[in-house]
Amino acid sequence: MDIVEIDIGNLYVSDINVRKTLSSEDDETGIIDLANDIKTNGLINPITVRKVDDKYEIIAGQRRYLAAKLLNFKSMTCHLLGVDTQKAEEISLVENVQRNQMTTSDKVRAYSRLYDVYEGNLDKVIAAIHITKATLQKYLKMRKLPNPVLELLDSKDENKISIDVAIELTKLPPNTDITEVLNKTCQLTNTQKKDAIKEFIKN
Image 1 (cartoon, rainbow, N blue to C red):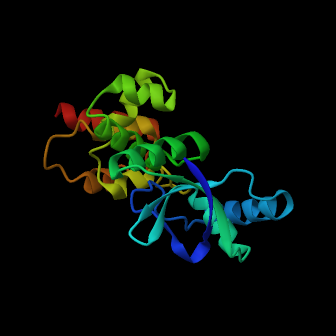
Image 2: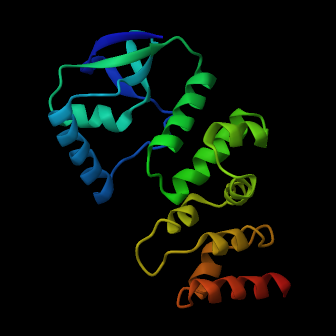
């Protein structure tokens, strides 16, 4: 691994990054706070990149990169790795899980992708991100839910669903319209939603 200084115009966020969009108010505030910290203390941890053609793909450090752009940095100090796409994705996923305050839906996607990268080896995923087997299995149960449903795990209004409700939704018969089920239970508490979905499955 080499430490190099790279023109910020030659850096770009990798498509493999689990946090592809940082658009919420909390994200924007976090980037501004990080930029202020970097302005005061400098960039303590270089970002991690790999060379792709004549550019450098950011494997780990998207938020630091965005903060540096806010500060109009001309260049950034980077860890330059010579890794293939699969290894780059593994590094990106693990770094994001360990470093960021990820949303619940982000965790479902990240844990699921790591599970795929490690070819279904639960022990490797557990060793990489240091969570219990029970917690990992709970998140993996939600991996097949549609994205709009996963986003409800992060909602801050009355549409928010709990992890327990999401897991119950995974037990619905194939071809069930999950959105319709949620619409019919929207006025219920999460505990009531869970019980209603159980009753629906039973009947």
